[in-house]
Image 1 (cartoon, rainbow, N blue to C red):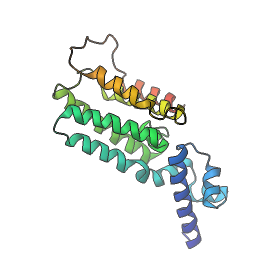
Image 2 (cartoon, rainbow, N blue to C red):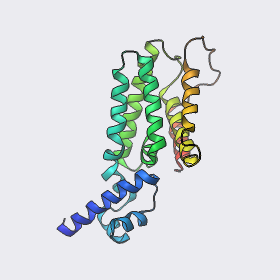
Image 3 (cartoon, rainbow, N blue to C red):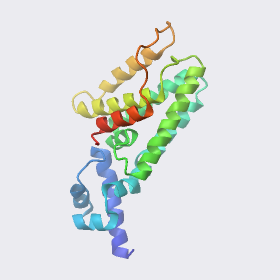
Image 4 (cartoon, helix red, strand yellow):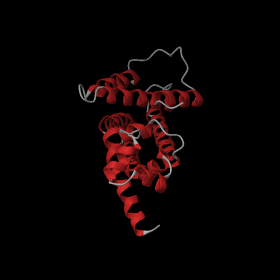
Length: 210
């Protein structure tokens, strides 16, 4: 890559990171090019697709913070407290950073790095859930799919009320955590959790993908 192309690519990465954090991963590519001070055609020549540009910057935008949240949750001596911390932290990240919300929901399945982060987040969430269940801290029928659907709806809520009630998500998290307590004893649910395919379909619809 020529020196001028390298400079333009760096400008585009920086502009994309800023706008993704401000407005989410669906921000128009023309706006990214405009902020970077290059033409729309230059963006396409250098990256080709939105997904390729996302993959260039998504690790710095979301992966480190999501990994850190999971690692910290697993470090709690009391698994139930670690579980509660993880839910609250991921929901807070979704509410304050639209890019993280889009990453957790797997909004762009053709973006390989994004989907790898999404998969890693799902695996970490399952470990955190199972650890809390083994400790008797949360009900046994709560699944990783249940949590991902909750994260998907939380992202929509946070985005919808960002200007009017930015802390509304905290109320929903409080209800979720209270409902998952094992004391007093909870009655069995009459509806089974989503299958992995159903969960994938639901998350795609929540994220606005086909």
